[in-house]
Every structure is written in structure tokens, then in C-alpha cells.
Length: 297
Image (cartoon, rainbow, N blue to C red; front, side, top):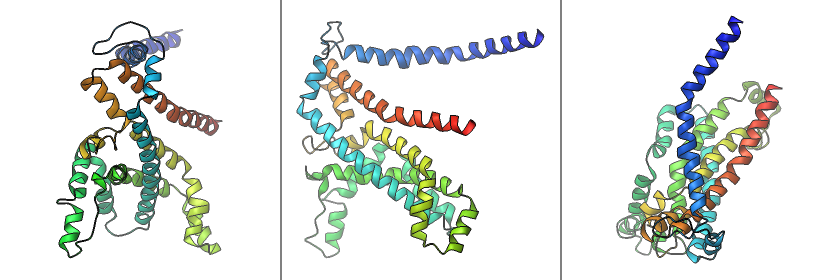
């Protein structure tokens, strides 16, 4: 009986200690999310109101040309950003894993961009890509007057400049995740491949990359959440321009929330983004849960 009382008292103390955090979670996170979803179903404009209009805001959102451009831009940006970041991060990790000299210095250099905010990253790349005083002007000053690299002011190419900046920012994080995975591979596997005389590219392609599945999944989920909430990089580099050529969903939400005074449409867009994030993260959480259960079985 004393042991049961002690356990009950411990659980009660733990519950009391966690109750403030639980209250914040319910009220701030879940409450605000529920309020956002509710407002997206009303006719709210400058101020919220309770006039229920069903899915009318979502129908208006899907027919909005600016939103369509934003979603298309996000699809292009997201796919290129994920592929390029994973590939570059993996290659950097493989290079560092060769026990090169100054490994710690190189890791710090590659990780340094990730320590900066997207605002700073965007400003740096805006200067670099500005045709008036960036890369284009520097190359022309070296004696190549016909050189042209003005993607940041071209509507058909500007979205790719966001990809450049975002990959530069995130590749270091991917490298750190991949390097941890590479260092976790049993040394006996490397010895066996050397004895068998397998070429390095085949070892990485057939053995190492499949073994790094969890590392790739973790990096992909982190990058995917960054894609959906992309806002500050777009604002800092192009402010969505030229025109709306580099518009992204998060900027669409912020503009309609604070500048255009269309609360209903903004919350409908925000709810759509929330559903997108859930669709990306939920399968990964299920996979992780099943993997953990199998590991403990």
C-alpha cells in the first residue's frame, strides 16, 4: 500500500507540474487553430464576424489567380529545394567523412549559413544577384561585357533564385544529419566492401544510401516544413516580385491579413497550408511510430 500511495502521489505531482504547459497547449495552440478554421468559414473581412458562409472562402481562394501562382511557385520551389538540399548535403557529408584535415573548420563553414535567419540570407543573395552591383557586374568588370545573370528581375526565372538562397541556407543542416548517419555505419561493412573490391560509387548507391533512410526522412521532413512556411526569404529577396512572380502562400496570407483586410480569405489560405503540413508530417509520424514499435518488439 505505501508503494501504491507513493506512485499515486508521484503521478499527481507530475500532472500538476505539466498542467500549465497543457493549458497553454489547449488554449493557445489548439484554441487559436480552431478559431482560425472557424473564421475561414465566415464572411469576415477587416474584423471577424460570425456569419457562416461554409466553404465559400475556400472556393474563392481556389479561384484566386494570385493564390494559384503562389501554390505553383511553392511546388517548383519545394521540389527543387528538397532535391538539391538533400543531394548537396549528402555529398558534403561524404566529402567530410573521408577524414579530411580541418574537418571541424569545414563543418563550421558549411553550417554557418543555417545560423543566419532567412531575412539575412535573402538580403545577402539579393545583393549578390542584383545586376547593378552583384555577380553580373563583377563578371562584366573582369572583361566579359556580354555576361548576363539577371534572374532575380526576370519573372520566368526569379523563383529559381529563391531556390539558390534556400539551398545555400539548408545544405549545412542536411550535411550534419547525413554525417551523423554515416558515422553510425559499422566499420566492418566498409572493410567487407573493400575486401570485395566494390567501387566507391556502388557502395554508396547500393549499401550506404539505403542504410541512411532514416536520416534522409528526417532531413526531408525538416526541409518540407520550411518549404510550407516560406515567407521571409521571399520578402527579403524579391518581396514577391517582379509582379507576383515569386509570390508564396505564406506571403499571400500575410498580405490579405494585414494589408488587404480580408480575414476570411487569409484564414482559409492559412488553413489550407495547415492541412498541407499535416499531410506531409502525419505519414512520417506514423512511420516513426511503427519503426519504434518494431524496434521494441
